[in-house]
Length: 452
Ligand code: TYD
Ligand code: MG
Image (cartoon, rainbow, N blue to C red; front, top):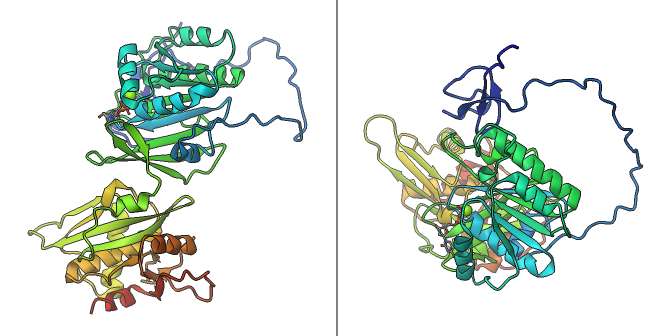
């Protein structure tokens, strides 16, 4: 028999390569290829076995919508699309130590009153989970705990008796199937274990939550290899040293994907942050140069954050750029546009840009606020007091309209801001909010003129 060909599997994205290489050609991750034996092997075709006739039905039917399981943790429920869907699989990914286990123990505890909830830990001993539960003040809640890593045992246990409402697996990288040769944490194990658990969840109708560690080194499989297998993917993010944690939906078969949930890590677990703008602006120093308040939107939710810039003379050589919470490429673009269209030549300086509070902004609507912070930093002049800024900047220096203008203004008014620098409305009618006076900025040159 021919020797099975070697396969090298990227532990980040799951791509299979015939040869080892230092870098995965598919996803660009370094040092993430691991040789795997066994696994799926080449497809075998159908062979001679007989298939069963499948049943065909119409689009309309009396599918009783199983009610979603609402945890009562509003920030979690909203991101999950309005609660957990029975028979679905949800993946919560995030860096180690970010708070995934904490969040899910809180979720499990909240749901435990309304149905059987299982928390299966492959990382921590029972006593450690209990200690955490005491710390979170949920020790009295009827969650069923287990420390297990064998998928065969877990499936066998869950296949009997009444079906649970929710099963949390913490984490999928510790689970293994004894029918595979590879070690726990490899792509083959993570995929096959998840597949078995997801199949069980669909068959028995419980909501399955898988925890997945994001790994920088490619030694264990990252959650990306599971993204296409589950119904919903949430990432739990946060900057080290900040107490804010952000839960972000990146895929959701049952809800929107632009929602975020904001939490604060306290010494008694994660607290919901109901008014994130107030929190992100809490440490604001008033109206100083180099800072602009951006009126942003995260999904359906307005969120004000401060954008801070520092422009410093550069030592000979390449100037430094450091960006936290925003896209570095976008910063280069704004700098180029400011120079070409606004005559602000600061590109030769060291430039630091920071979104205060550890939020990561993805909206292009932040362009105008970034530009305002940069100009303010280089001129040393503060923006007009109590002002919010938003608008997208195009390559010709024009300021372009963005969505949900009214919600942005309303939130700004609610938090005591009085002015807004924003894109021209060109005849669009806005429901005027009385508190905020509007100043339309048509081009970056007009923005620069504010600082003369
Ligand atoms: P954890 O949920 O174990 O992270 P993950 O499962 O994503 O690896 O969170 C661990 C961190 O959270 C740890 O640094 C301690 C901190 N923490 C608190 O600050 N307060 C708490 O109440 C708990 C339970 C943890
Ligand atoms: Mg954990």
